[in-house]
Length: 462
Image (cartoon, rainbow, N blue to C red; front, top):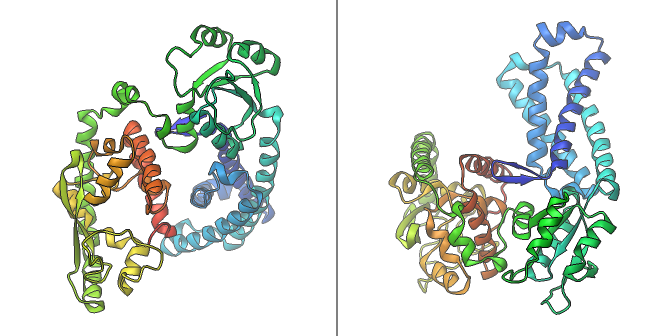
C-alpha cells in the first residue's frame, strides 16, 4: 500500500492507473500512424504531445470520477464495463467544451474519435487482464489475523471486499478461550503459540494484530522474532483505516486518543486552515454573489418566508453558533421546534428548495460563517444541539469531533451519504476521527477535489 495525501491506496491500483496513462498515449500514437501523419512534425511542431496530454488528463479524471479506481468497483466486471462506457461519453462531451473554448488545443475530430475508440477497447482489455492477475493467489500476499475479537472481524470483512489490496487471508490464530466473533468463514489455524510454525509452513508474509484487549496477551517476543525474520507485523486498526478511510470505533482505546500526537493539531496547521478558509470564502462570496442574488429572488417568488434559514449548530469545543443556509423548506415545517433530518421526497421541501438541495447551492451562505470564523472550509459537519447531545450520550468518543472547528465540507461528507440514524452518525464519526487524526494540507486538497466530484454528480443531496 502507498500513502498519498495521508490516505492509503493499493499499490496495484496505482499500477493500474499508470498502465492506463500509457495505454491512452499508445492509442493516440496509433491513431496518428493510422492517418499517416508525420509523427515528428505532429508531435513537435504542431504541439501534438500537449494536445494528447489534455485528452489523457480528461480521460483519467473521468475514470476517477466514475469510481473506476475504487477498490470495491475494480473487482466488479459488470460495473467496470458500465462505468467505462460512461467515462468515454463524458470525456467526449468535456473535450467538445474545451475545443469550443480553446480552439488552439484542438485535435482533428477523426484523430480524436479513433484515439478514444482505441482507448476504450484497450482499457477494457487491460482491466480484464488486471482482474485476472489480481484474483490469482500467485501474486497475492498471504496474511493471517492474530486474534478473534471485533477488530479482527472488521478487518477480515473489509479485506475480503477488496481484492485489489492483494491480501489473501489464510485464516486466523487465537486461543480457544479468547472471545470470538464471526470471522467471515476464515478457518481457525491454531493457538497463538503455533504462529511461528504456521508462518513458515504456509508462507505467510503479514501478521495483522486483531486483538481488542492486548494488555498481558500480546506475544511480544514471538512477534519481534517474526519481524526480525522478515514477516510484516501490522496493527489491525491501521489496516482497517487504510482499507476504509475511517477508524474502528468499537476498537478505539482511550489511551490511543490521549497519546497519539496526531490528535493534537499544531498551531501552524490551525493558522493555515484559518487563512485559507478566509481567503477561499471571501473569493467564493465575490464569485457567487450574482448566483446568490438570483437564488434569493427565486425563494421569495416560490414561497412565503425569509430567504435565509438560520439555525443553531454546535461548533468547536461545544460552542454554539448560527449557521446560514438558503431556506429550502416551508416556514413552520418543524412545528414542534425539534429538528428532523430531511428524508427522500420530503413534503416539507419547497419546489425551489428541492433543486437547491440537489445541487447543494443551499449551502452557499455558509461562506459567511467561514468569514466570521465559526467554521473552516474543511472540517466535521456541524449538527443541531439536540442531535449532537443525543449522539454524544449514545456514541462513545463523539465529543472528539468538537476538537476542531466544523467545516462546509469534510471527509465524512464526501465518503458517505446523508445521516438519518444513530448508526449513520456513528459511521460518520469514524470518518471524522480519521480526518482529525490525519489532518493535513494534502488531505484538505483531496477533500476539495472529492467535493467537486460530489457536486458534479449530484450525490447525497436530499
